[in-house]
Image 1 (cartoon, helix red, strand yellow):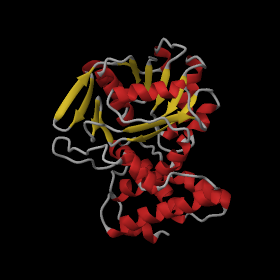
Image 2 (cartoon, one colour; image 1 turned 45 degrees about the vertical axis):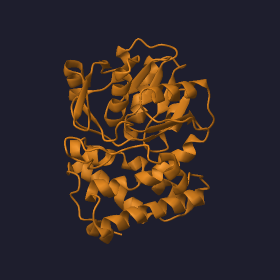
Image 3 (spheres, rainbow, N blue to C red; image 1 turned 120 degrees about the vertical axis):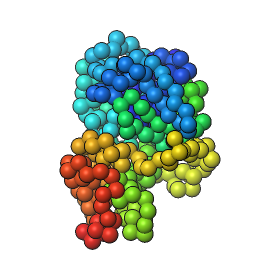
Length: 322
């Protein structure tokens, strides 16, 4: 089986890396800063339920620290705003034959990667994972941490996609090969439009629910105007079924997704330009107004720049901006 290189060992990458390490698969994690240092010194800690497992996979801080192989599989799990820098460096260090799997939110990463790597794959990730502290990742669903469906970009499948899916299934995930992987990634994009609302305002309240619904309605209208197909809500429910089981970690339920966690960690950047901003861009191209997604995009970017903690804003004030 090919070696997995996890590029971006945060919430998603860290959980996948931990499960590969648990199964003693060949895996290398690329991380940075305090998170990389903590894993190199004390191991990668995976929390699930009341349990913490510790693994010691190879952890490096640069693509130049890896002795690359022709058949390596890179699981790209950096945030979308970091994709161009990540793959630009990767293209200088790794052979062009490697497979690069975009296990990220958004629908633009694959297009960026394809400029540099012929073997580009999309992955639809449904995984309630967390990363708030250096060296620690959390799997909020257990015993199945998540769903990861893989297909070639822009469409189709091959032996590499099948091998990736087989390996991930073997280490505890629920995965299928998708010939139409981008169709499913657009469905995930519609879901991710709520990330900004949850990060800014939290889950509760009628005003927050109105914002989430309005953002998705705009997204649906834009995709239809653009002639972009996406999996229906019924298909999505059928795919998820009852596969994942949310389990509190140390008595606490998951508070928010990737955008919420970016504000919580004070990273200063956020992925909203590739989520709500994708709908804004498509709306402008196809003449569909997207005022809700525009406001959410601007407001989350400002919150990240200002270092605001998550759930700092009243959803009624955001609605008043429209």
